[in-house]
Amino acid sequence: MSLLDYFRTSKISSASLAKERLQILVAYERSSSSQPSYLPQLQKELLLVIQRYVDVSQDAMTINLEQNDNQETLELNIVLSDRRRN
Amino acid sequence: MARIIVVTSGKGGVGKTTTSAAISMGLAKKGHKTVVIDFDVGLRNLDLIMGCERRVVYDIINVINGEATLHQALIKDKNCNLLSILPASQTRNKDALTQEGIGKILEELAKEFKYIVCDSPAGIEKGAHLAMYFADDAFIVTNPEVSSVRDSDRILGLLASKSRRAEQNAEPIKEYLLLSRYSQERVRSKEMLSLDDVQEILSLDLLGVIPESKSVLLASNSGIPVILDEKSDAGQAYADIVARYLGEKKPHRFIDDKKGFFRKLFGGK
Image (cartoon, rainbow over all chains, first blue to last red; front, side):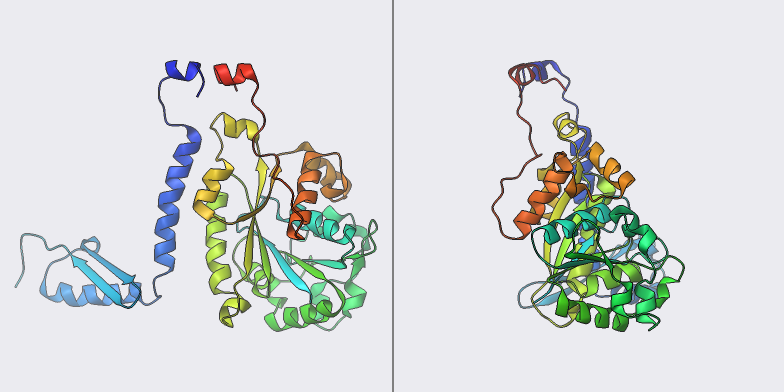
């Protein structure tokens, strides 16, 4: 820390901006590349079935496979809109 | 036992060929019989960096297709008789590279050479895949720049899943970081990702930092691997890298420069 730094406006540096963006991106890409290859297809088909009964949009659904030491959990999240079709 | 090293990065222009030329020369100069192979079919450049472009007669595709023997295609380096170069084809399509063909070539080279250095093309297509497939060690050449770090991370994923060692469930490929085109000055002024920043994301064994250096362009201009320019910073960085790879203890250099008193006080650039 230098003397002049005290008088400088505390602005985020170019390098730390780069690091932040990279960390977020790399974390996302690592998690998506470690998922099994059938997940996107599974998501598509599930969505088609659900859409037969309920009005949901493409991005209202997230699918996630989590692996712990001794079990795998398939997590499915669907946000339903207020108006529901029968 | 021969050791197969792949020099890879994903991104182009980060210094793979410069690194391949330098470390293969360095290993040979240390007394190890070494061969360096160009996998960039259609865009070969290792021959130019090694200064043997006018001596290329046959190439790796000729060998795979049985049009030449391996020994007809190998070029002895003019600076070091323990070093040979196997050039890529400049005219053929990369589809001519086959896993079986490369496997056979490597098997034959392994009988004669101690180190086999594979200079990977950029990207993640066939040439890059085959360059890394048989590797024992991977030198990941990365620049302190967002797209290069991202691509390196992608390559690490491929090394862990799409290599022979991964497929055979053998001990994984040993991965090393070579951080190139590093500018201490720009890191100090917080314009450039630092070594620590890059390591926070990739966390690899660091083999060395290669400073951004005028000598790299001069070396490629004259077709002499930069490691032979012993006075240059980049040449010394590569010499350190080779020594560390061979197990010598060398303190890391070119990471922080000493700050002067006034610079400390005023934080000047």
